[in-house]
Every structure is written in structure tokens, then in C-alpha cells.
Image (cartoon, rainbow, N blue to C red; front, side):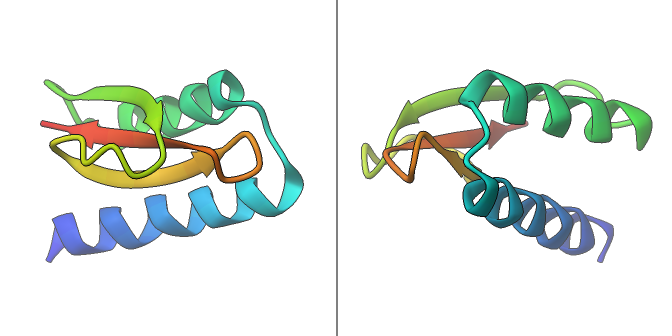
Length: 73
């Protein structure tokens, strides 16, 4: 249940950032700060081109929807 809530929060954050047009690095830093504040350890966030099928869960989009931020544990 905690993982589901975390995913929902991260997806909400990602969609909000998309609407405001944040840079990928800025959004990645915000997501990392939220994960660190929740005590999550042993994860990585990677910026990839949209639709590349990267392993992991997409937690945000940036650069007007052309890139995605992928969470891996």
C-alpha cells in the first residue's frame, strides 16, 4: 500500500511539473528530495527519451513531454 501511495504522489508531481514546464533536472531533484524525505533508499532516477521502454516506473515527464523520469529500485 505504501508503494502505491508513493507512486500516486510521484505521478501527480510529474503531471503537475509537466503543466508548468519544469526542466528535467529540476523535476528530478524535486522527486529525489521527496523520496529522501520519506526515507526511501537504494533507488535511482534516470532521464530518458519518452517511449524508450526503460526498465522501471515512469514518475514524471519533462521538456514538454519529450522526456520521462524513470524510478528504479
